[in-house]
Amino acid sequence: MTNNILDFEKPLLELSAKIKELQSFMDEKGLDLSEELMKLKERAAKLQREIYASLNTLQIIQIARHPNRPTAKDYINYIFDEFIELHGDRKFSDDKALIGGIGLIDNQPFTFLGHQKGKTTKENLSRNFGMAHPEGYRKALRLMKEAEKFNRPVLSLINTPGAYPGIGAEERGQAEAIARNLMEMSALRVPIIVVVTGEGGSGGALGIGLGDRIMMLEYSYYSVSTPEACAAILWKDSEKAGEAAEALKITAKALRELGIIDRIIKEPAGGAHQNPQEAAMFLKEAVLEEYRALSKLSPEELVNRRYMKYRQLGVYSEDINNATAGEILKEEVE
Amino acid sequence: MFKDLFGKPKYVTVRTRSKQEKEDNSPDSRLWTKCNGCKQIIFNKKLVENLLVCPECNYHFRLSARDRLAITIDEDSFQEFGQDIYSADPLEFPNYKEKLAKARVKTGLNEAIITGEATINGYPVVIGVMDFNFMGGSMGSVVGEKVTLAIERSIETRKPLILITTAGGARMQEGMISLMQMAKTSAAVKKLDEAGILYISIMTDPTSGGVTASFASLADIIIAEKGALIAFAGPRVIQQTINTSLPEGFQRAEFLLEHGMIDMVLSRHEIKDTLTSILKIHQVGVSNYD
Image 1 (cartoon, helix red, strand yellow):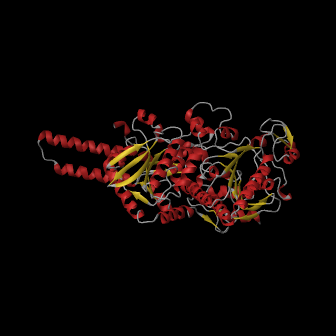
Image 2: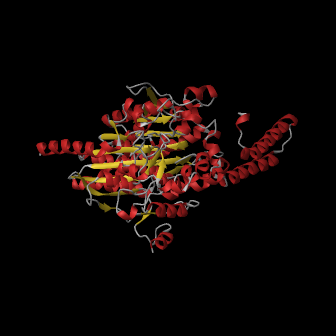
């Protein structure tokens, strides 16, 4: 635990150490210092609010990548009353970085999909750090088709740095697997609810991320490229990751404003890793609420609305005078 | 490196533009080109006659969208649509406006793809051609919208769709809006599929990232041009991740054919004839059915 402390959490931890100290001093000496204790606790709560209200994007990424951040399996344990994991793509293998199964949430069946990271190095090696191969995406598609057959809604939790960039992944068609999922998910006749719980790494995230309702946890991020890679490509300087992170607009708040996502799910004070159970309850509440609304739609309505949701995504101009750099181009033409 | 050699006369100015060639920019470099494949000196006249394929080693130089169009469709058959859609700058991303302006001047195109209706040896098609010189052929809102418009035009006219791709991936300067173009275009391909319209994808050097992982990989028939790099993650990223050397010919068109990811690898000279055959077989099928 101690080596997983983020820099900006430090003042907070110092304060809570003081609170503990005071508490044990009180107990030891039998003194009543509860007023001082209250004051310290209030100060700690205020400090936490202040720190978390002014996080920059790189700090939010740190929370999203926190080793103790709840994983797909944690959420399964907290929100499903019953759950059976299902394995394999029936073509090549079973991908441990992208898990799936069926279960009940408040007596409603769901097909579940989610990237699975580990918390220890050993776990992470077996889970490939949550970076799926084509097999993972093909397993996901198999389970979604099954969901459609049995009229079960799909819950998809995203938490991946990206699809795995490796030789085997390319040989077996990483691009095709992701593309196929996008194509099929666009017309799946059951509700698809997507939540980015940690890292939303580009195509690897989107590969199980096309849906009717797209939500993000408060301190997750979703990006076309990691800020480090973006800075390296655009400015040949990975040190500019902070600048790139802000420019890419990848936080839940920024993406809600851009209309890319539908809803932000609140996290417990200090982030989901401080209280995984409470984080899971917030997530469950949001998922069930969205499901109830979607369940009222016929499959046709559902698929049409989903298509229109994506059809209208994009920002462009049909008038060269309003277009970016139109002025410069016009001069050039003249 | 070359710009619009097969189009209208005003484009026939051979210009060498790659960095490598700028370095040895002797007065003769407007007459000849050093082949990237065999390093031999080839006269530009010969190179142009041979569709920018090295006559010595068969190395395929990259083509601009207009040149690609010129060697693929029937002369004067192109009716462009979607040309009046321009990129906005939704994220106000540093230097994006300037980069767009430069790309427009450099390529004479409004965006990284041109779309229209045309005929190929008399067979009517809807066609889209990407251009790598326009910001690395990256897909942002405009490319996503134009691909979607082309698909919709195909559904509407029931003409087969041909998309010729070359792309570095999603356009970073439009952030998540670019990533979502993968979803948008793939959803549109699903509509095309349901409508029963033939879709042929031709992947040229290089086609990677978000374009490979969306509409380019979803065609009924996938053709790759000889030697083209076709990837999800680029070779450099993979090498950095796995820290060993990559196999010979990794991610080249021939490698994808071997692994069952594409239908065929064609040299540039074969593409138009093969397209014609496919369109012919397809049309016979369609009229028999009707």
